[in-house]
Image 1 (cartoon, rainbow, N blue to C red):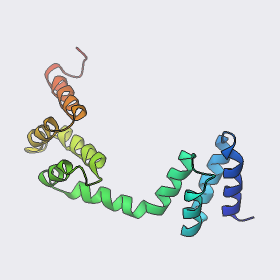
Image 2: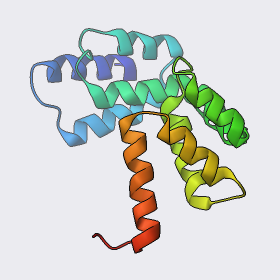
Image 3: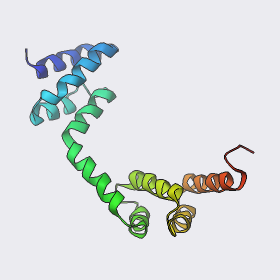
Image 4: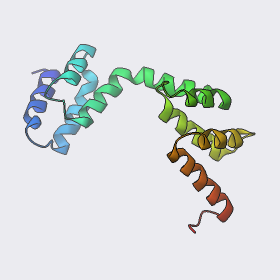
Length: 145
């Protein structure tokens, strides 16, 4: 029995019951030895349709190089370029950009904090609340008041 067949057999079995941690880890560890076609087949299988952990691991293996390149590109953007892409809600990178902007805000390099504050104020309620929380921390220290 190949690794692919074994994982598929386990996915079928656990489709009707809860995965055991040991068996799930074993199957996840076996994924790296599968071909791209086998990974795609498992990812789209009806037996893994509701299995979040297994599907996430398959996705990471399939797209690891693209995910790394996207994160690297975002880290290399200037703060102004980052904000422009943040304003474009169709970019598909909003969560990563938000994470990078929060990091740069906390690092407080140059004018980054001021322009990031303005971008967050003009954004969603969650971003506005985050900025307000950061400003309160500045004023009152890290204690809750």
